[in-house]
Amino acid sequence: MKDSTAPGRSETVAARFRREIEHAEAGGLERASMTLRLTLTDASRLRRDPGLAVADISFEDGVMRYLGVAIAQGGVADSVLDLGDGADAPDA
Image 1 (cartoon, rainbow, N blue to C red):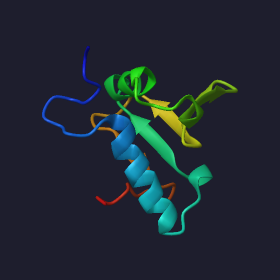
Image 2 (cartoon, one colour; image 1 turned 90 degrees about the vertical axis):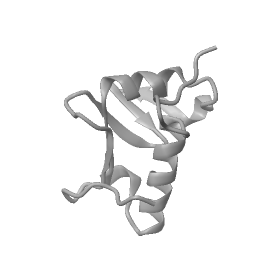
Image 3 (tube, rainbow, N blue to C red; image 1 turned 180 degrees about the vertical axis):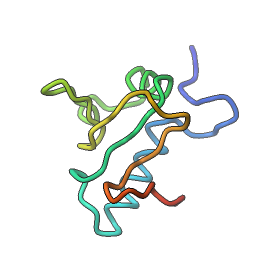
Image 4 (cartoon, helix red, strand yellow; image 1 turned 120 degrees about the horizontal axis):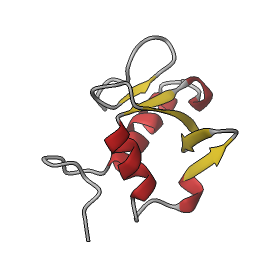
């Protein structure tokens, strides 16, 4: 069985962004204002993560969401959590 972590990383895409989303929310930001900007590879890893609860990911109105945060796939060299204010999430 393949691992859903990227080479050289110890946590899954899902775990990394769950932590970042929760950290940003604890700082007072609303999930609706955030966007996960994922590489195509990370978006695929998230969709295929066998440890991800079905309730954590949704597809509605043509938008994929993780924990209620909209996902923009592709167009980035590195996946980031966009906080909606032009800044990326700080490392938690």
